[in-house]
Length: 404
Image 1 (cartoon, rainbow, N blue to C red):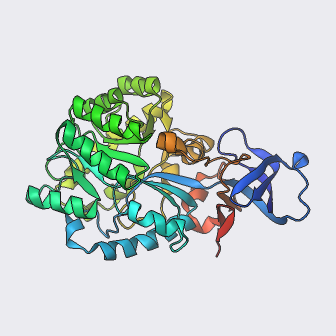
Image 2 (image 1 turned 30 degrees about the vertical axis):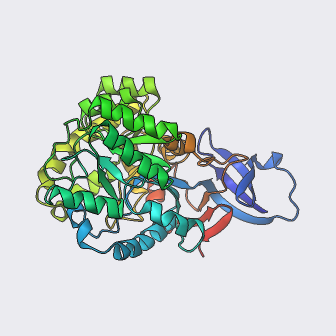
Image 3 (image 1 turned 180 degrees about the vertical axis):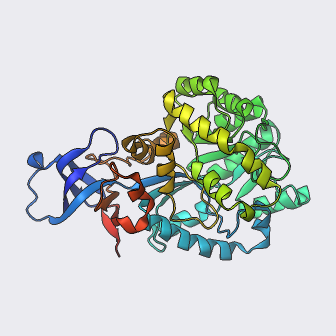
């Protein structure tokens, strides 16, 4: 048993606690609260800390192993090479304080076992398998012949094209057969796809209902990539659990999200980092990205102002692993308090998995013993969590994994 005695505990949800103790009993928290009320644990190893808080979740990443953000490059590089790059990314995420990820299209299902068995150090992976879109949609590789895209998708299972109610049902069942913990669909066009428009709805209402229904039969939530309002409203009416990006979210969308208890995963980081280095993007993506920057920032601020539940996600997938905490600084810039921003990455985050959600993201008895030890208070300066060097210790399932 470990006993962490901290000057300040940020529990994930609720007010911070001064002079606090967290007791770890193997992979589970046995107690978290005021030191004066902590049970006696005479044989516990004591760790002194300035600040203790839950490990971070990144609810939107892609284990694609790419060096540049270009989906058309996926078939041109061996899967083994990209998986090897993914191993380095997972270690960087862990060092940045990320102890759990929701992987929404990529090699996550294949890499989950390696992390779970301890072969590869990294956050716990809750993977979707393939991202799913219709023909011509966001994860269709538009520059390739369509039969090639079908063959590549079936072989790698990083992206899949599905049309019609029966086709949608079949592809979801194939992800469930591989034990996907969440289903990822593309309800609107995208920025990083060649032909489609980010505002346009992609799946029909009937297809969306089938995607959500089949996932729900296996108690899996659906995450919907969505920029435009038409797809957002249709996806919410179908029963998706999360809206990813939400660029054109307005008052009506916000009201629908509150009514359905849906969660927004805004992924500001991917937009900010792309605009800062716009020449990294394929030429077709540059004007699309520049067109959504201001609107997306307004949507995130509106979501906060109107009480939409938000969970932290970055959309990291190509070369930016370890920069996850920068999303929290962007949330604060959008109007969140540091405590609210931390809640998006801790207590709010597991709910993005719906019925598959683990007891994680909170310093509370019975929850997973994933936590961070800091020398500086992120409530005073949220940038503490954007700098891996300032995250002194990372604990995962009751074991210290940084420093090793």
